[in-house]
Length: 102
Image 1: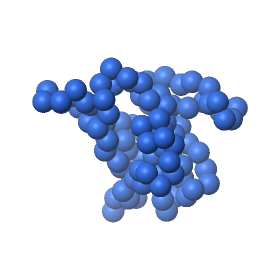
Image 2: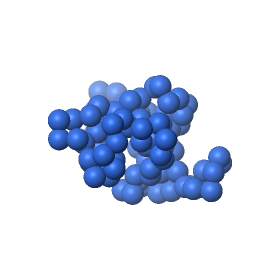
Image 3: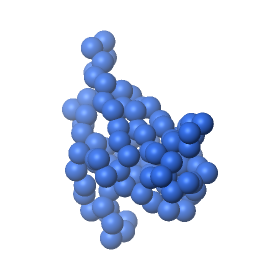
């Protein structure tokens, strides 16, 4: 799991590419990226499956903000990004949410 931040000079946004390897995705057929940035809508951000089995998604997020997020594997299993900037307790479960600061 990882993400890459690219700050744009032309706009007050950060282009963030989220990546989940085949092994981290536990060989899932689909992965969705859910978080504050898409109102936790399970239909909003499906990740693209690459030929090697990895998953990726790129979002433009407004700068100077923090966003909670998690990955949803095969619409059943939640997974955190263990390279996240920090973690906060989820208001809906006993688990933590990943947080990205941009």
